[in-house]
Length: 114
DNA sequence: AAGTTGACGGATG
DNA sequence: TCATCCGCCAACT
Image (tube, rainbow, N blue to C red; front, side, top):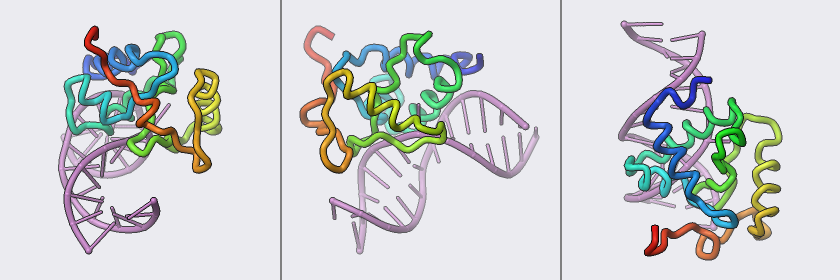
């Protein structure tokens, strides 16, 4: 119960909630859209904090955030990587032989509507 | 109150 | 394409 104390983190979550099913965004991209350009790490910290609480309860699709290489970032939560990959595959996202997502295909790009 | 920790990204060679 | 270096915010102890 401590993550959303920060208004900064709340802004991050708000952006993540806008990522559509079947698409992904990078940490840097989320940071930029949340109004914190060049603070990709901040997004990572915010999502890490989320994980300690229940992300699903907040409707924050944290699994749709990957690093700039299109890979799932390693984390401390045991098995978290696999959970994220499975969740993304369930949304129809494919991984290549090196475990990377082709951002050119799956990266979320805001349309003219929003 | 100062130090530690933690889901990153761009530049460089 | 890969390895290294460095920048930098918030929560916790």
